Image (cartoon, rainbow, N blue to C red; front, side, top):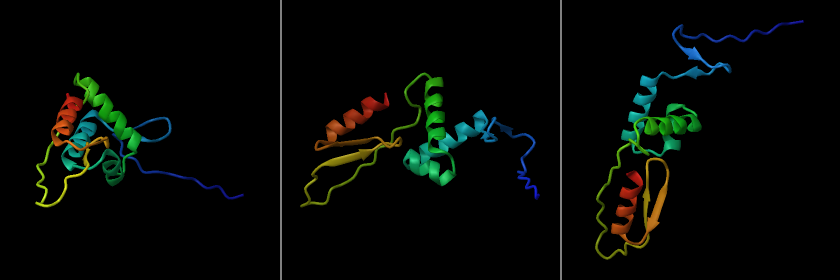
Length: 119
């Protein structure tokens, strides 16, 4: 009977959970969350790009915000967009970094709602 051994080379300083998954240190989690905040990507897209489980990244973001005493410490960034003359603005859509989508027809109302959600 053949025996197959599976092995994995691990750095000595890396902590692992009971399932063998690497545990990221606080400084690494904060660095990754900072990179996410600057990326302009949705949480899901950033997690996929970095090879991090989406739900793990959501948990880090949630805990980071709670530890700082607010809903979110990630900055809200607005970009001014000019609608070319002759085009109807029609329905507007704002996608927040966490993937939340805000829709409406009034830019002022959407901006006010986005500010309220970031407070």
